[in-house]
Length: 145
Image (cartoon, helix red, strand yellow):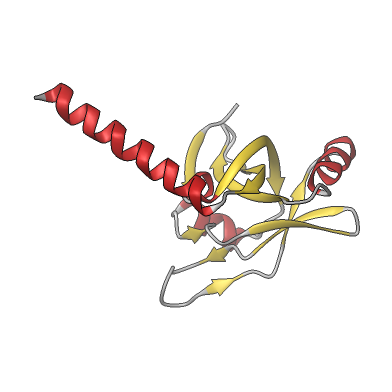
């Protein structure tokens, strides 16, 4: 299903509890696709929202990451009506949101985005994930020596 993964939102799994994942197409211009293929894109602070029963992604930064700060206002996502209704009903619950987790290209070279329904973590949940990560690192170190 997924071809070459290009951009991954690494902070998404730390900040949110990821529940369901959906794959959608993107409506992009030629310059935007070129920046995706050259990996000059940031999706860390981006989010998804509905406007007139259509799903859009906001705050994706294209171009040179720190020099130009070129950002697009919104990018339309391509999903069928059944998926849109399902996603909209799931995001209407309190505390749930839609965030992009990956942008990749499929076998035909078409850019796709993976969005996840997520719920924000509390501070103590974030501390627990840090402790678990450190415990795994320490265990690997002990097994090596």
